[in-house]
Image (cartoon, rainbow, N blue to C red):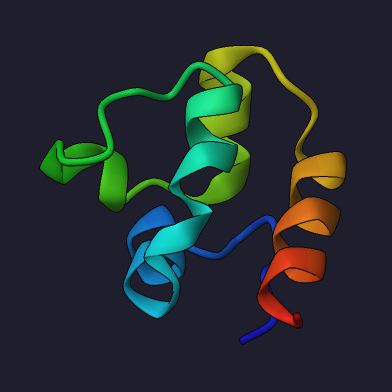
Length: 65
C-alpha cells in the first residue's frame, strides 16, 4: 500500500495496525472513533495542526519495511 494525503486513516490502520503510534504522535488519540477512520490523512493533519507530507513519508517508509 502506498499512502497519500488522500488515503483514509481507516484504510491505513486496516492495512497495518502498527502505524497507530504515528497517529498518536500527531495528537490523534481517538483512532477507534468511527469518524476519525473516515478522515483522510490530510484532513486529520489539518485538524491537528501538523504538516501532512512528513507523515506521508513516515508512514510509507514504515509500511515498506
